[in-house]
Length: 55
Image (cartoon, rainbow, N blue to C red; front, side):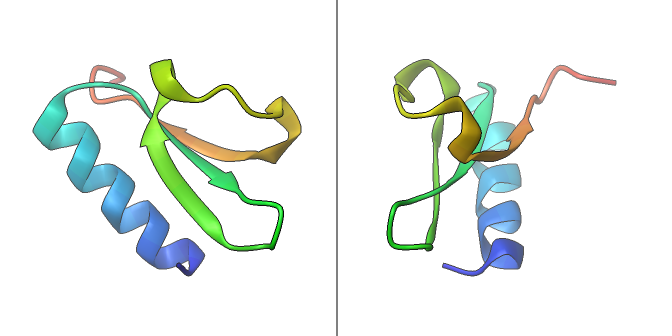
């Protein structure tokens, strides 16, 4: 998934589920998106975080 696709997917998930979403770079260089509460990987791999409650 490209970074632009990951941002679009993360925004959609954050606004639908109303939870914080993490965009991260996987070991093979691809981007991944998942709820922040479920992410247990390296902090250095996090590219961005979407918070639906942030102003």
